[in-house]
Structures are given as structure tokens and as C-alpha cells.
Image (tube, rainbow, N blue to C red; front, side, top):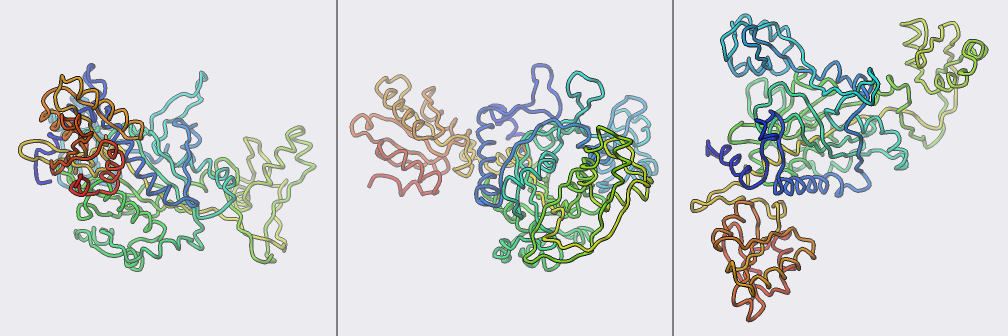
Length: 579
């Protein structure tokens, strides 16, 4: 990790071996867009499947997976606050017209942490310090706000605007009630999703670290805030975690190592549901090859957090070129999103919890003058009455107080036609909006991280030493001599046999055996099976370990069983050979 040129070596290797490269290369490329090649896509799939295993399959009965659309109507992102708040500050040069992200310009040129600063604060710093265009030294304009949403038109009609989703969460929130009810209405409930998102970044300049089109893995974990209901976290309270609370960060202190239990007790993490998923996230990153000492969780300050978050931690990983880089975020979104969507859609997104025994409570109810509604709205009267019945009483009270009327789908009902009465009622349960904790991972960043932590140099040769189960391919099959038909026939038989057993296999018969071993090492293939002349005599083959370069002989009929042990049980190659 100390190699200052490591990033450049990885990028060169990624292009040469088909992991990833800039998109639209023949047209000069387009910043913020990358193609994922064959081996990169295999690695990306392995990362996604490992995440599914850790967050979904290991929590069956608690977490489910869904898929929602890439494009959403504008009302969804107005309700979520993204139209108003999903912005970055930009500044333009009056002379050359170049546009910069204002906070990054301040950080790069002045060494000031500008994250979360307002437009006015940034403008004040830029003017007081006399910052000018880094390229032409021209005078800079005022700082402005730039929305990062990709806008589109849905269908042929003008005005029917939509947005490419910048996160997966809103599709889940909008569909929450249907998913919740289809799963017999139990909390806590995690709803997970993997998919593409788009963010119109101002100046993405960090390769795979900052993209405009990328894949994320996200989960919204819904729970009852009054009960928290994350008792499954209790047994992990003794587990270690590296954490940098904001109170320590503001004192220029580094992260501390503590236990989950202590982090919750000291108030570093305000919700034990979030603490649990942070711990699972730590295990997930360790699984793809990141040592625990090279990661920590950094709390964001109030100005640094997203508009929907009550508390946010960034999962930081150490890199050679970029220093500490965020690969995941954990946000306590409280009931912000569901409440907003309930207000904008006027559909109830509350859940119902039955009491053990019915209780007598004072309850406010909305009483509507049905005669007035029928007389004024005629054929729409029944629909309006049903819509009002489903509205939250406090929302109706607020609307009548502020507007002296209630709007239902654009139709105005005057205050005089509505009464709020309070009666004693026997209720069998309570309605509430669940709170949400969200862990969210960027897959493409993790693809780069996996490559960096796998990169090794041995005797002047490059080896991608991935954890065996994460390697792009499971094994390569090699005939010892390139043009020997008998060896090739045996090798192709083993190749087909392993494919039929469900392995991801490469066949390579081009070049010397040494060059083919080197090629497989650069791709990160953990096992190489070589068919030689002894194979023709006794049906045994050699298996070579990518990392140690050691080889042992094994029976060809045992190869699938041996390969499973080698990859998934991390069995030492010396234990696999014929005695």
C-alpha cells in the first residue's frame, strides 16, 4: 500500500486484462463513465453476491430483495427533497468559462475542509482569499447551486418530467406498504435492492471512485422506533469497530477502536439497528480483502449530512492514490421519507400494531358535510369522501389552520364544510410510521478497492491475490504443450467437466506454460490445472496455487471436489495432493 505508483499500475492492468476502462474511448471518452470488462464484471458479480449473502441470505425472514424502476416521476423526487436539496455548489470562470465544484476548489487551493459549507460561506472564503481560476487565472463568478439529478421526459408529452434515480431508496419507500403487507405485516423488515443509479457529477476526476453512472447495493431497514426491535444486535455488542465520532473529528482526533456496545453506550451511534449493520458491513469488506486496520466509520456533521439523515457514518477505506475514500454510507433516515411521501401522495404509509387488549383513548376524527360535498362535487363526491377518510387527522388540522381549506387532488373544500371532533373510542392497536436505517454501498468503488488490495508483485511479476472466492474465475485449465493434440483433448475434457460442475473456468493454450501462468496470475485466477504427459499415463493433473506457486498432483476425477475445498474452504494446497 506504500507504492505511490500503485494506482497507475492498477489502471494499466485493469485496461490490459479487461477489468474496466473509460467509456466511449474511440470518441475521446466521457468523464464519469466506465465500461466494465469480462473479468471486471465477474468480479463485480462476486462482490454483489457476497453482499447478498451477508445482508440478505444470512438474514432470511428479516430482509427481502426487490427491484424498482430506474426512472421515476418528478413528484417522487419533489417529495423526497432531492429536487430541492440534491445539489452541489459550482463556480464559473468569467474568462475561460470553466466550471468548478466550489467546495473542492477551496479544499484543493486553500487546504480548508469545505464540506457542508453554504453557498454564502463558500463565496465569502473565495472572495476574501482572492481565489481565481486555476487554469487561466481569470476572475470567478458568484457561487451557484447545481442539481445533480439527471432529468428526462416520460413519454411523448411535454411537462411529463421524470428523473433517473440518484439512489435506490425512493422506489423502496414508495412501494413499502405493498411489500410490508405482502409479507404479513411484520417489523423489523429490511428491503434491499441492487441497481444502477445516475448522478450528474460536476467534475468526476477520480476514475472508478467518482462516476456519473454506477451500481449501488442498498437496504432500507424499517423498524418501530418506540421499541427499536433490533435485539438480534445484542449478541454482537462485544465486537470491535473502528469509529470516528464527530465530537472527536472536530477536535482533529483520529478514529478510536471500541466495541459496538460501548459505541452505543457512549452515544457515538444513536441507534443499535445502525450499529448492527455497520458491524455486518465491516465483515463484508474484510471478506473482499480489506484489513480491519485500513477501514473505519466516520460520522458526518450536521451540515455534512444529507437532508433526510438524523445521523450518518461514512465507511472509509485507505487507498494508495486518494487516501481515505468512502465506499459506503450508513444513515438513520428516521421517518423522514415515508412521512414526506405520505404527505405528497396523501396515501397512508402507516403500519398497524395490535394491542394485547383493546384500549379506550380519546381520538380526533374528521367529520365532513356530506350534503355540501354531494351538492358541489356531484359524481366525484364519493371519491373525495374516501380520500378524506384516508388522510391523517393532524395533516387535515394543519391544512385548515394554514390555508382555511383542504385540497384533495386539486379540489378545494372550505373550512366550513369540515369539523374536527374528539371522541372516546375503543381501539385495538396503534398506527405509526416506521423509522429507517440505511446501509448503502457503491459497487464500482468496491471493484477498484478489491483490485488495489489484491495487487501484489512477486519476482517482478504481478499477481492479483484476491480472496479465492472473490476471484473473477475459479480456475484455468492448461495443456502443458501448445500443439499436442492428446494433451489438448484431455485438457478440453477437464475444462468441460469443470464447467458442468458449475465453476467459472478459462482454457488457455497460447504461448509457453510460464507465460500462461503469468497471465492467469494477473487475472487473479486462484488455481491452475496443468495437463502433462503423466496425465496420459495415470489420469492425474497438477494444481498450482496462484499465491505460493506451489504445485501438487491430484486425480482428475477428484478435481471438482478438490477445487471446492481450495476455493471455499481455503484449504492449503499441500493438503490436497496425492500422498
